[in-house]
Image 1: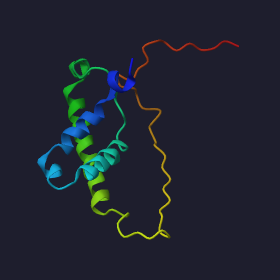
Image 2: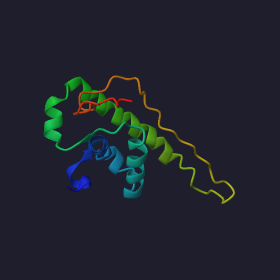
Image 3: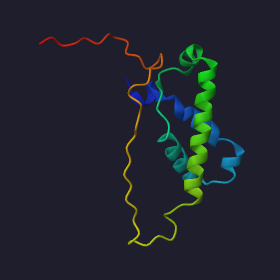
Image 4: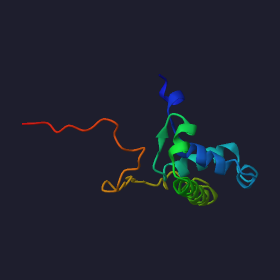
Length: 125
């Protein structure tokens, strides 16, 4: 098994579809598009799958629409970071310090594709 071949984040597909639109390909360089992809994907919860067709056949349409909308919003948010790129004309004394913490709602109900296949066993003392 090669994880980069056999498994992928479906959100990469959706972000790629947004970035393939002419409004992005005509306005941004390939380097900027790659930056946009990274900045958009870091905002989205990953959805790792093996086969798109299997995943999509079981995914409710409303959920797919929401995934697509989230991808569009994430790209729009990322676009403002590229346009207002703080790296332009920056001196070495002006290096930003960024602290990030991804905050997932651990109490949220798992999606059908997030649920463990095997039951969890409690250890006995």
